[in-house]
Length: 437
Ligand code: SF4
Image (cartoon, rainbow, N blue to C red):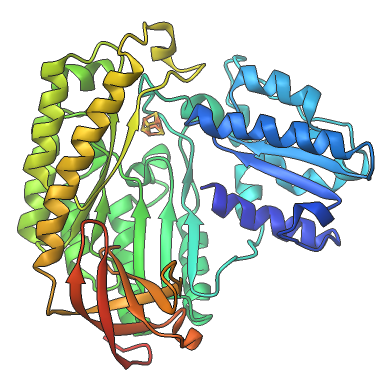
């Protein structure tokens, strides 16, 4: 989401005459779009701003901050940054810069939802896509779920869906410009349209229309979405994914815990029976789909037995990837008031167990791919010298020896020759133009 937001920030600043640089030493204006999900990211913001504020002794520099900011941090950032603003007010950023020192206020706890007042205006801003072949499209902003560990509903406001016409127009434009992958973004993509019942189409309908567009345009394209919430994940979504080639067969479905009692305390609004049904249905209807998840270990009060249920869930669902995090209380979230009673070392131990579980399954999964030829999208140079890095439709990492930078941004076929726990290695077969379905 921050990457997508930053593409609009760059557009607005370009319009205002600024030129983008990757080099902070030469910048006269530096901004951060912050994510409050982990404390580590916030700690980095503080170290950066202290450094930049020192630079102000020897050069002219304006700093700004936006993104998901918790109330406590907002108070502190007001003193440290020249400009703070909510993303919905992005179009006013050039004006704020020219009158710099003026900050927009965050009306937290006022009972109204100030976050999404101008969100449609924000969506209308044209992003400066940072890639020529991968794009992120926000389809929704905010969250109504109020998981007890999460502060997003307090930093992004309630769920608001972007008009489907604008989403479809943006996709059509991107496809005409030769983009190869598009990711639909939202805190809960699959509750798309539910805030405008009767006026707007639903998420499965949106996917269906994208699928039809893909069939019509006859370009090779992978459309992803992230993240869906298990509560709103219907069989219909999976049926539609199966029906249209353009809808990539990869699903990121956060489970967070494998224990019903923990899920209740997390206020996740789904239980393991519901989650199991979704996974079984995916396996039945789209057996080739890869499955990714998010898990929190050491949530407040998580017993050994409850953790063991999460480990068992991992064994059962055989995820291809899990973004597993040790629980850390987020100020503003409900669980912040509860005792963070699992010692750090114990959280680390649980994280390690889950990582090993993931590794065990991945090795088996990846090994059965050896000898097969897979379609991949080449994304750039690999860390391994003279290798390129690519992703399969299921977002598995594939590297292969090649110095041909022209392949970046292209779909190619790669024969897999070896496999490890988190990546595959292959040989480049033949370069192909975007193939028609
Ligand atoms: S669904 Fe839960 S974890 Fe996801 S953004 Fe909403 S409150 Fe946060």
